[in-house]
Length: 467
Image 1: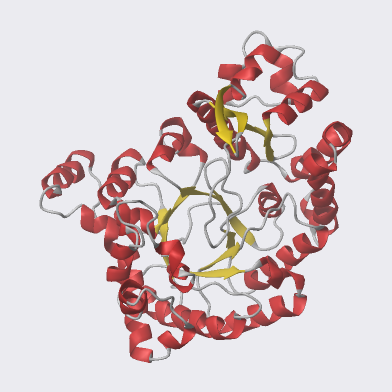
Image 2 (image 1 turned 45 degrees about the vertical axis):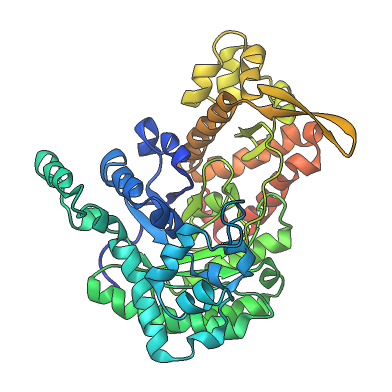
């Protein structure tokens, strides 16, 4: 059973990362995307700020909450604080989720400091209670913040003065069933748990009149076996949600082989035979599929600037490097590569030339005004930091905060344009980039354009859709 409400507001979804991201999700940027995806840890960590962000500053932008239940099946070390004050303790936001979600994760993870296993969900009553609590958290966490005694008067005033509805506007556009990560080795036991969660969640969501999304998170190795993909899709046919959310662990569309990309399309197409599909972490290849009407994709999600791929298990970040999202390649590249690419495209001839052959987004119009090559350097401004490592002096370049802000704003405007490209522009942009930049930047930087073009142009139905 599904509901008539829309599970997503449009094809362009953006994941809320940190409070620092807000400036690139509000103001002029508010109209550049359709929907927000917010991690449950953020809702748990700063519920008041999230409620304020959604209800006031984001003007009730549609959103959904990722419950992140997969976090409790991994090595417990990923959940523990690394701070010197509370080493080894479960992080505060995760503690809140453990309390909200209850058994079996509350005792197994929160008290015993052990990862959950499929057997922990064998008892049907335990599983049902867990599912309902996960869904209840998503449904009410934001709205609950507006009814707290210390802020309820303000929100009542807000509702009356701005004629805002305190009900559905503060609730997610869809609920996400609890889910766990699937690898080739753990496929069967965790898939069984996932499907039972989806079935229980479907009934609960329907009783609340809210669409249900089922999230399927798989390892990259699953894509290497077409039979595994087919088996996975067949297993989920017993559930008919309003939406499937697909996440392939650490999958970079830019470095993926042709075989992997075709397998990704097979995955999308298979699930789309059951319900519409959203890629939770995708780049321009996925956007191109959506624009061309292929793979059953109705939406693609990205984070701020860097969130087109993500590992299921978090890893430490590397040294920050100034990167510019090059529209011709649909890719973030180091500033030195961007400089060579813009020069090869003829973008430094004049400001008007830059806007014609490189980018004419609002941010680039602010930056590129008089001398394009000099102005463009603002996207790569950095400071030198010297230190000693293993007895050797080392100097490294770190981008300035202003540089990061310029690059992030440019990225958001560039993504906005990509979601609006016509069918013909999608394939033409890849062909142009392959021809004009392939020899300048080499296969490591520009080679994905040729692979994407070959895959997209040979998929069934592309000829009809791209006329």
